Image (tube, rainbow, N blue to C red; front, side, top):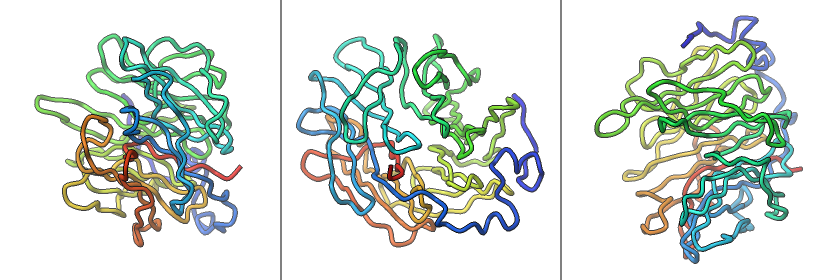
Length: 325
């Protein structure tokens, strides 16, 4: 595996990241898209399944977008298309030996359909900024998680990234589409041995470990819309911002005691972030837990719970914040 000495000050790296350096870093935030709705996975207690919900950034208009087509059909791991018109997700019947497959639907939950003809394990799809590629989670015969890639219509599916003895999760395209962030996890006896955030250069094939040599476990990477930083989790309770200029990390969120945090994302306009905290395993319909979807300022201040476990709905995982189409 190749590692690169990587600084955004270098001309080549500036090109790779979409060039945020010097005065470019002072760009007017007004050039960023208007915030649309958030989508997220949550337990639907009425059906005992995990389904997809949407809500505004102010916590208004909570809407269930998917319904199970069978008693154990889960729809989960949603992500918005870059234009805010479609939602990509995975669908699986957990009562049978049915592998999850990739689907897309309109932003209001209508016209859901299979992407291509994926028949093997395919989950958690994300579209590239140009919307011509989809990256997703798949598995090797060995059982290790890998990252696959296909064309937007579902053709040309292949394994893009794999690592012997490690599992790869959570692909996330950079704003210019050249880089792919992901989580690399090595399991050992008793649990996770190491977890780091990597970036893969789609043009050169180089891989860079952004959190190399740090004892903490990192995961759930997502991009700052400027392309100069990545949000990620560190340990169970922290959200950090990884600066790609010097690879320093700064904590922006510390979740309450006895919780864990997942899926931090920026709003398209960069004026807020969102994330989920959970007490226990919020993705298991058979366990009563407390999941909460939060928004906050980019520095983590003025955090506000916009969806909390209430009645049948329990936020679980995978938040995506779409642009207003």
